[in-house]
Image 1 (cartoon, rainbow, N blue to C red):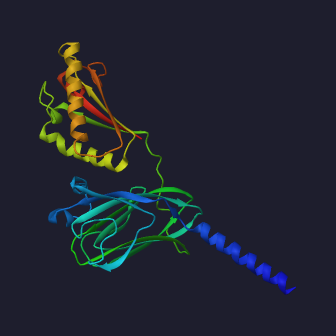
Image 2 (cartoon, one colour; image 1 turned 30 degrees about the vertical axis):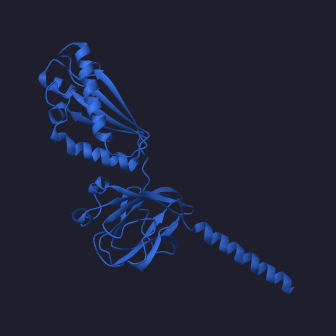
Image 3 (spheres, rainbow, N blue to C red; image 1 turned 180 degrees about the vertical axis):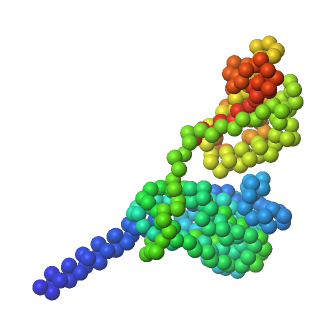
Length: 295
């Protein structure tokens, strides 16, 4: 009789343990680049300026658990003691509809995004600081992005954790949008090029920089750059001009970046107008370069 009771209790606790383990979220390996930052950049926290810094290391961690430690203990996998930042990516799998507790503890600044939604903002310069937030999730796989930077050479610390917890919990605030198969940007000639020229104007560069940041973040499988013209001039001239402009955009986007995306240019000339070529307004809209990010 006692033996039977013992085994019943043992099975109960084993079942409870398995159930608890199933409730915990799991993460793929956290991977990403480390960037060298200067004094002005590091005080801005996270922004597109981060990707302009020199890549000095690549991170691949099973977990993010750099506990609070003095500066004489080197930061893992980074041969630099100050003025650096890292952007890490992972995927999170949720097995049960429930409430989960997310925490981010860092010195200096850090941020957490889930499905491109900012969840924890622990950025800017400070000593070890802990932020927590409870979020409800439905089962599924979610994209994770984490930012961390080290400004001053005093102490290190970067710890991220997520655990199943009891309520009360907010409603399901993280929604998984259906990702678009492609994202298209259109650069009009007025902003991008002088008439009959293929050299990129300074006025187009902020837009191109924002597209470049998105390419670095999303890592699309392919980036199509498609040049278009109006119908003034010969077919051959328009094809060549649209090709040169597409090539100029490709050269700008691919210079000094490390991306797995495949870039391809297409010269359409006057073949695919979006407005009538009978008016100057219509011709102006037809003179364009389209950048299409394909996942």
